[in-house]
Length: 389
Image (cartoon, rainbow, N blue to C red; front, side, top):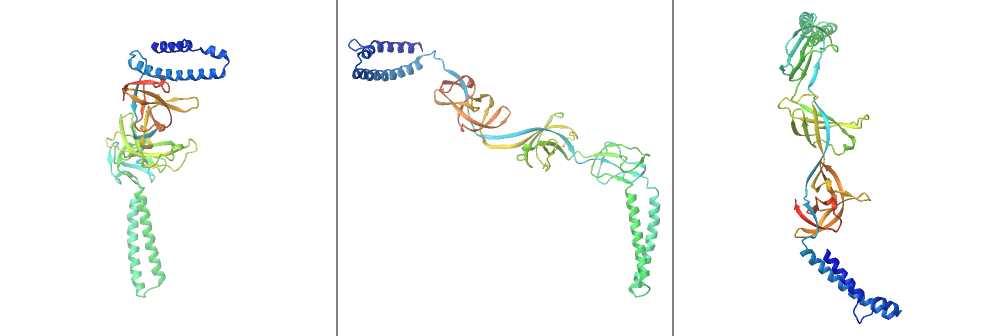
């Protein structure tokens, strides 16, 4: 740099002094001779062009020979197209549709409890019995009366078919028989309600009412039964994601308490927007082979709402913003032997994921982008790449 300054000073001095036989610029101006002034201007212009070319050659050689020349040292990386998946992060609760508290359908005394807590039961298995209040003997009596009514009806029917007897006798016997049958069915249904059965296969989580207690429909709880095989996570998704969160979308699930991470998909998307918080419900099934996942467990979920098969990702830290609000970064052009020129590029960005952001416009696949040192350089500045990633 010092050599360049000395050289320029020498040129200026020679230019000012001129040769012994030539008039100085001041003398030519003082002569007020237009033709002489124009001739001097042409001579000076030619000298200026010649010296500029020589200065450029000298500076280029100095840049090669000067070991103390200061060039900005930077690191860079080459952009590469890759699949970019964006996720929205939410929190949800684990639940199951096979979780019910069983109540009695018939009032009476709970005369027997046939299961205990933690017991695995099958669908339709008898869990408890309620006193039927004498319905069983009554049913036996009604069945005898029904049998008699049936016999009477069948005889009257045969006679009626033979045109013997009156029609009214036939119709009365038929009505009596049908009434007896309905009464039997009603009593059987009432007795059936005194038997408590499992609505689905599962585990008795809690026996709530003990044997010998009085129970009644809608007021007494008998058992809590649960099936942990079909678990799912329910979460509220903000309405702005209604066009991107759909059935079949990939989901990453984390259960912090268990230290487990699962991959699954959205199984159901609600059709109702909650006016209170402007969200809609989403259900996400989870596998529970270990049986460690319990209802009401907190889960962190990441739903894939956007995918770009040819995304260009860059660190957010290298992006700057100008006075107009435009985002920009620096790329390297005219690179020779790890030395190139920094060029400012205005870019348009898309979605972010972690520390990286998607670039939509401005750079292309294979662009060499300045990484470390990007904040301290200027457009057109010479830079040296010391590390390329």
